Each structure stands twice: as C-alpha cells, then as structure tokens.
Image 1 (cartoon, one colour):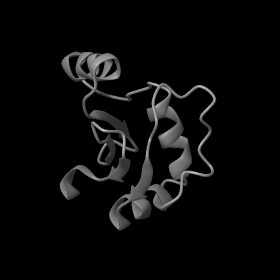
Image 2 (cartoon, helix red, strand yellow):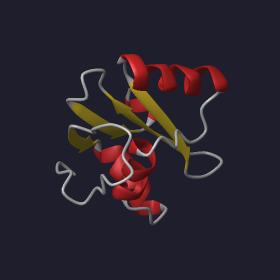
Image 3 (cartoon, helix red, strand yellow):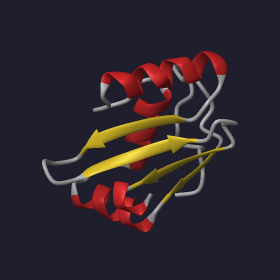
Length: 100
C-alpha cells in the first residue's frame, strides 16, 4: 500500500502524509480480512485503539503542538498492529510491533 487515495479525510484530525505498510502488517490484515484503509481511517479520525492512557494523552498533545502519533489495534489475542504518523505528518506506516 503506497497511496492515500482511498482514505477518507472528511473526519480526519490530521494528515497521514504518504501511506506505507510493511509486508508483515499486510499479511496479518489479510489473515483477519481487514482492509488497511479501515485502520488508517480510525487512526486519522483520532481513534487510537488500545493505547494506555499516557500514550493516548501524548497523542492528544501531539495533535495540538506537533509530534509523532501512534495507534495500536488488536487483531486477535496474539496479534496487534501499529500505525505511526511522523511528527511532520510526512508519512504514516502500518506495521507489526516486532517490525519497529
């Protein structure tokens, strides 16, 4: 995935920039029949998924003052996936935690 043309920006709280995904993340999403755009839409809408309160608060501060944004979504009990948007909003990456 290397295009943001399918991502709906109507309720977006920030720009995703260039959108990329690792092969491992794409494979996991395929296994659970989830489209990458579904998670990117949640992320840019401010749904951070399963983050602890401190990380969610850091995201809210980053929205106001700049900084990296991160979401974590649980695909199953054994599998989670992250989205990280760079502080300058130049790009967003969908990846597995072990690929970080």
